[in-house]
Length: 138
Image 1 (cartoon, rainbow, N blue to C red):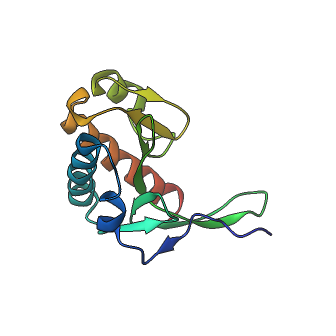
Image 2: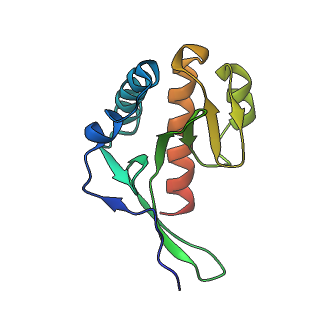
Image 3: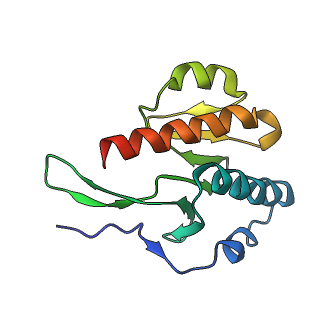
């Protein structure tokens, strides 16, 4: 079975975020770092070379594939900041409707900047996502 490329490591989160060339995105990511750390109660760790993750859980699918993943995370990508959350957290659609300007996929929510969103809704989304993952993978 293939090893996951995105694993928790000891690279510096601060050093990584300081490589973001867009000053506004860099500032938003440092604020996001504090918000998610405070909301989850977990210290940020690097996952791979480009994902900032908080906490971890072990998953195992019916297919036999298994691995570890962050309970919540984000990554500053070229076009947007990707937020990594559970695809099925409590009140997901209702919270996303109040979240502000974003795009979403199954497990990712994409934002351009923090000023586009409601940070209190973000905190609730992160809390609900972490709770759902912990319930699914105790």
